[in-house]
Image 1 (cartoon, rainbow, N blue to C red):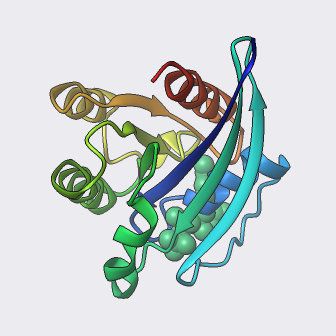
Image 2 (cartoon, rainbow, N blue to C red; image 1 turned 180 degrees about the horizontal axis):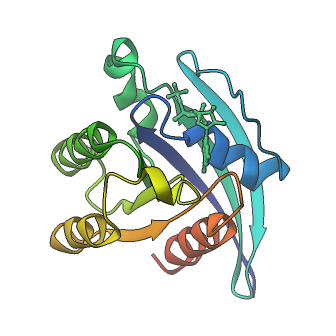
Length: 170
Ligand code: GTP
């Protein structure tokens, strides 16, 4: 029979990395050049139908600004999946992503499905973080890795499909 699964998914990452933009691309098929910075967190839902299951995502898009850091545990607690996002044009955002990975490893659900996402892949001419660097870090830490662009939609649906498949298997 077809399983119905409800899965809490959290996005974490530096301000401006593109968390909201990835979610809006996935949920609404939209992209805004002037996306406003998230305050606190924003909530979205989306349903994905796989052959083996229907996955309803409860998506928490957290605010990347440092002053909201202390709220994060409320959003990753009990999450089935976490997407840690950085911006390939910002080495700082990559360093911040590593801190989120550490925090999730120490304090998150030990069975969480974790993806490291290198966003803004369309801005290749401004790249500061090589693909290999992100991929290597992900590999060393047992994370899945994808390069995405919320702007061009590169790998965005794939990201959520991969997560749905992994959550459905768990
Ligand atoms: P906070 O809410 O502050 O944590 O930021 P965020 O991580 O949600 O980033 P947001 O989605 O608000 O995007 C920040 C800026 O980057 C916006 O101006 C977006 O239009 C832009 N942006 C997001 N994703 C991409 C992308 O893939 N490519 C390009 N070129 N710009 C992007």
